[in-house]
Picture 1 (cartoon, rainbow, N blue to C red):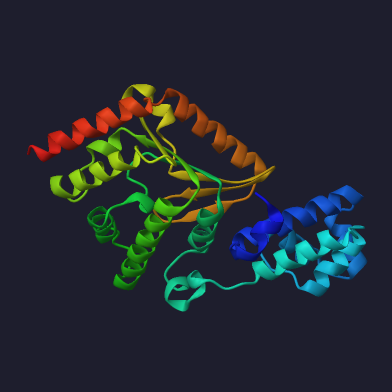
Picture 2 (cartoon, helix red, strand yellow):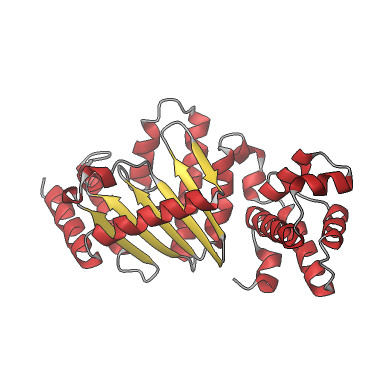
Length: 292
């Protein structure tokens, strides 16, 4: 990703991530620990940690002081990072109360990361992922999510449709692995399921969507993970991991965990059906349901 070109238009979550990585690398290049930086600036250690974890934004004044301390003096680079810091404080539609009150912190970050990622790898063992669900399929999933209020359901439905629109118009490359059980789980009955399967089949013909089915014969050990997404941003070490469970979701920045899940995804991809065989299987299942 070309940093100078992307700064002005990128989402706050992506900008915050870019900035925290830049500050961590600059600190490490000088051989400073977080504790030393905190002591030098008379800050709490937690402040330095939260800046480098992306949990808080950093003011332009603090940023310039940190960069000077790390001997980052190139005027162009300093201005670039100041612009990144400004972008990290920008508000978006997801910050509006009607969304923030009904979505988790991880989901709010995901909405921003999805718009910026160069590649997105998705695995789901049970359902069509939310950003690819048709209206009928999404309505049935949310209807059966009993712990959600009506307001929660309405907002999450709207957000899923927004994510779907973005996924179909973005330049991001999507790699999707679904367990074969997804095809056999009739969400909403045959009519809803047929519509969803034909939509999934349509996506297999779009250049930036590559879909593979993990067959039952691949072994149970591969299919026992919860849904996850690995989002890459085209730069070294610049990726995030989104983990989803029934009652909670989580955004993970640990490079080790990201590496582990990336390796797991590649293992799934290698043993899954080819895209051609996947399309044939989806088509056959859709035809069978339509004949009911």
